[in-house]
Length: 283
Ligand SMILES: NC(=O)CC(=O)C(=O)O
View 1: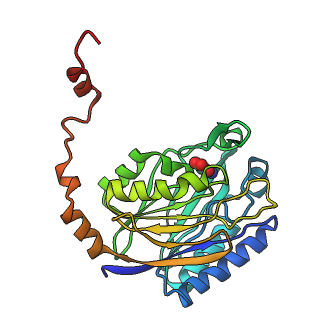
View 2: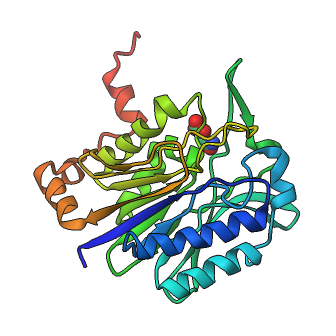
View 3: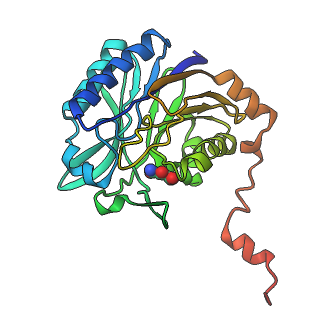
């Protein structure tokens, strides 16, 4: 069980929620039949366009119609399914939430985006998820017969500590449903995946919606799977498609044995107090 196939579905999500879900389910079948995937992931906000003006309108409870469809698909195809994310409504609040289903269709975990995407790059990209969403405050990791897999959403990939926590907890694959944009995507999307893969010597997969030039928020696309050596194993262009790659846990062990950084960490030094001791008092 040291090898398995991971497939990412770069879905084009439009205004019609039921059509988005229907097409996601068709693509899941194709990920299994055409790519022999046993772990499949959908993009961030796959049942709704991405934008603060849409979250309330498209939000559902969990469980709800969208997650019921995901559960049935996971059961039908006997796969682990990382259900991208959907706008979730709970106790009068909205969250950007990912759900994970096991091969029997049971929801085995869920995750609410913990770092909300609030940025302001004047004249290029201003976005304030916190205008409508609330952040989650727990992580999400699930066991498979292959390895532990961690899930986080989009902006969460910028926070190296979070990936490190997952790695230290034993995850060997991190899956990020995400929707970077045309300002940050070309510069940061792949670099961040490679950085997290290399920092933690694990596999990183990031799965975007396909690009829709007419949408109010234009997603970058380029879903990708990176190995622990930071090689790009698979990368989409901007169009709707599936990309897949083999996850090889023996290769991961080889990299970790060759460059054994996790055993060489100096946790005794990684504290602000250790800096204070180094800096002469008069500076
Ligand atoms: N959309 C996001 O959450 C993050 C993003 O686009 C970025 O970090 O850049």
